Length: 248
Image 1 (tube, rainbow, N blue to C red):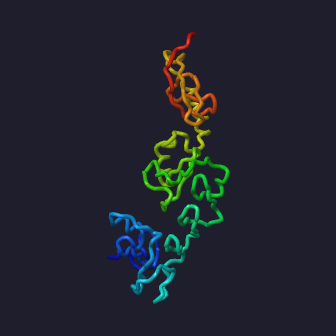
Image 2 (image 1 turned 135 degrees about the vertical axis):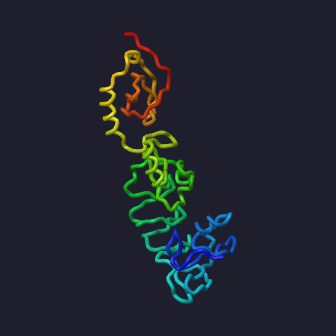
Image 3 (image 1 turned 90 degrees about the horizontal axis):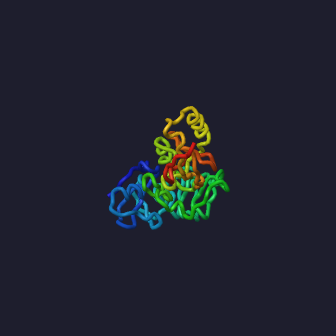
């Protein structure tokens, strides 16, 4: 059985088929294999490939030993990744290939993930965070072909899942921390709260709140539009106690 042509598949552009070490079948890539079979292909154990042009079965290498066709502009002899050149590089710490260029990334040993240089010293580290599944789609992040987005709280989402999440809300689905800088919106909410007086029966009502952004507790005046943390001025808060009326 063979799946894929001379141009590869929907996942990768390559000129060969991988011979799966688990079942001996030929597939254009591990993702095509995993989607069709009831087991997963171990990319690191791939030893043979078949040239998509001349059909010669041979050891895994960058070009065909028979017709000299190039199997991939990029080839990793560890991951057995063949693809067009996307400035890929193999990260020994991650254990897999990443899309570069390499000089634009660094490996965070605590997060156990390659991150943009712009995040060096500017992100919150969480031990082995990349080994957790995306909390939106529940799919793997570490080996995903979709890039990861690092939230201010340190949690990871697939970049596409992050973009979809922002259409519905602004909080991290794991810890409820704001997933982006909400300062401008909070100041707009200040104006809306000031211009929207509560009905008389609620004007002296106080409530205890917990801030999802800074974890501080406050006692503030109840308002339907939102209740602002007195510590960090965020409206990303939740009621943490009973309402009570104050004496005039």
